[in-house]
Amino acid sequence: MSQAIGIDVGGTRIKGALIDTRTGAVLYQLITPTGDGESSNWQRAVLDTAEALTKQATESILGIGLSAPGLPAPDNKTIVCMPGRLQGLEGFDWSAYLGKPVRVLNDAHAALMAEARFGALKGVSHGLILTLGTGVGGGLLLNGHLYQGFFQMAGHLGHMTVNADSVQPDITNMPGSLEDAIGNATVGRRSFGRYQTTHELVDGYRQREPLATQVWLTSIRQLAVSIASLASAFSPEVVVLGGGIMQADRDLLEPLQTFLDLFEWRPAGKKTIIRKAYFEDWAGAIGAASFLLD
Image (cartoon, rainbow, N blue to C red; front, side, top):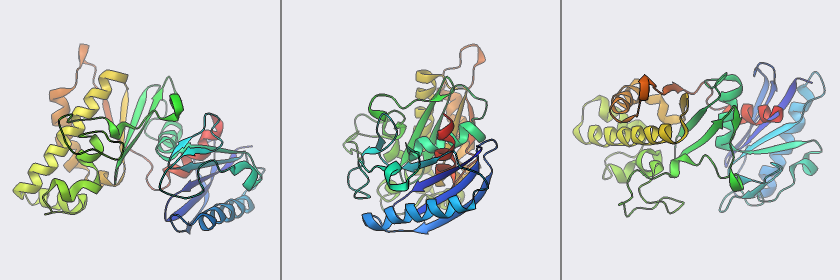
C-alpha cells in the first residue's frame, strides 16, 4: 500500500489530500469550510472528507493521518489538550469515528514531517522548522525522527523568550516570546497602531518608512537571536522557515542572514543552513499522511 489520506483540521476549513507516500505527490485534494467551535459541523466535515478521498484511492489506503492544533496523546490517537477552540476535539476517538486506523499529530509537527519526508529537510538527520504566521509554531527533527517530548509538547519554539524583562506575556504566559516579537497577531501593538499586518509592515519597510524599518528589523534581529540560540541547543544542519511571513522573501532572509553572521556560534566554520519551506497550505495534510510511515 502506497496511498494514504492526510486531513488538516483548522478552525475555518478542513483540508484533505490523498497522497502517494513514496513521493509525496498529491493525487487528489479538497477543502471543506466549517465553523470554529461547532463540533458537529467540523467533525462531520472530517468524515465527509475522509469518505470522499477514500473513493478516489486506486488501492487500499495505508490509513489516515490527521493534523490538528493541540497536544496529542502519547499513542498519537487523540488530541488530549486543546482549550478554547474546536469544542469536542479533546479526547475524540478518530479511529472509531472514521472506521479506519488514524494517527493524530500536532499541526506544526505535521508541517515538519512534510518537509522531512519530501521537502526542505529531506535527507537531513537534524533539523527544525519555525512556522511564522499569526503566531509562531515549530518542530524538531532529531536523529531523523520527529521529537515530540514529554506530554508531546516539544517544538513549541515560538514560546522561547527573546526578552525576559518584558511585561507582555504571550498565550503561554512566557514574557517577551519570539511569537510576540514577530507573529502577525502583534504587529499593531509593536508598531503603535500604525500597521496592522505583517504585509503592511513589510510594505512600509520597502518604502523605507522609519517606524516600519525599526519595527521590522527589530523583529528580524529577535528571530536571528532565537535561531542562533536553537542552533547552540540542538545543532541542526538546517533550519526551515515557513508560514505567511515568508512572503517577505529577501526582505526577511537578507537581514536575517546579516544578524546570524553576528550572533551564531560557528566553531570550525560550522554554519546553519536556512531554507524556505517547500510546502505551504498543504503541509499539514501531507505531513499527517506521511506520519503513518514513521
